[in-house]
Image (cartoon, rainbow, N blue to C red):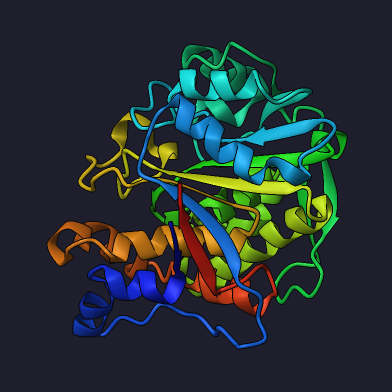
Length: 319
């Protein structure tokens, strides 16, 4: 079944709900803009994940970086390891990739990070901590805030990337989708993440629209680097308003599981994920909507549009 993005918005409670709340998701949607395809399934299991990958794998060749969030110690909401194990086994020359973190965590150091990776069960394939041997700088073309982003140096060892994202809320970003996964997730633990967050000497982590824009610019550096050899799967399951970086301290899950979305268009897959949240009944979506809007998280979407990163108009294809 194929349904246009416009009809999808009309079909659910989105239009009534967003108008009643005075909400307008940012988009331009010119007639000349090409429509992206976003595949969707309500199924949440290993077989469905592999089917979704098969729909978007066309440009994935050579050495493949599987970018996902491996989580803090004992993180309750991260992706099921058996799902990822079954998928990774079908992707030749693939490795899970991560970078060290900036916030206080055992994952700040490569040694500590490796221990957490093992503790959380990511033991079935190579896990490359990309900044274990330093960083490399990718250019940010047309950036307002950044001219380059320091990423883990090992990123340059890969020909393609599969961005496998647990979609959820985020303390600073409002929501954490595929954009966050490749921007903050590929930025080196010290230099790159500092460029994106601009942590002050007093220890403040400023957010809002400027942070969203820097995150978009970081994502653009990664997207441009892979030059079309990149695909995205968002898993809308166990969605707390908290990021997986909060581990066992994450807020309880209050949203229902919605399924998976897959695309070769970064902007479209994150827009479709956000639209699915807004399509929920007002009382159900309220915690996540409050988190996204209070942090100006929707600026991620509008700035991706301004930066020419994918399409704001998509066709949702249920499989």
